[in-house]
Length: 74
Image (cartoon, rainbow, N blue to C red; front, side, top):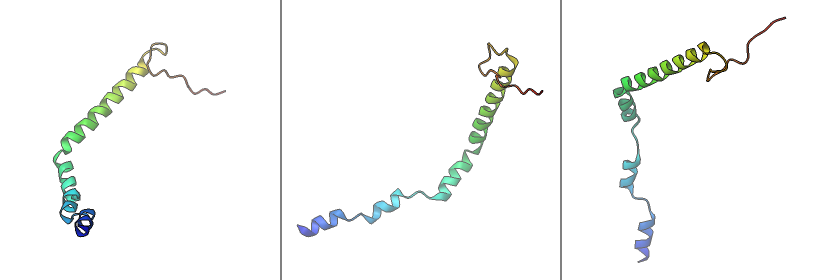
């Protein structure tokens, strides 16, 4: 009975290999989905650009990003 308790406390060697992630597999998945990553990033950048241009064209009282700080010189 004492020997059974000691073996149950030790980690099993077979489970350690299942928990590991291969870095080459991870890079392969990223490379496989590269166009999805590029397109989502491009669409987000395009949306942010359009959002900021629209906010600059609107009057400050209606703009969702008002330009409060304008440079002035004396």
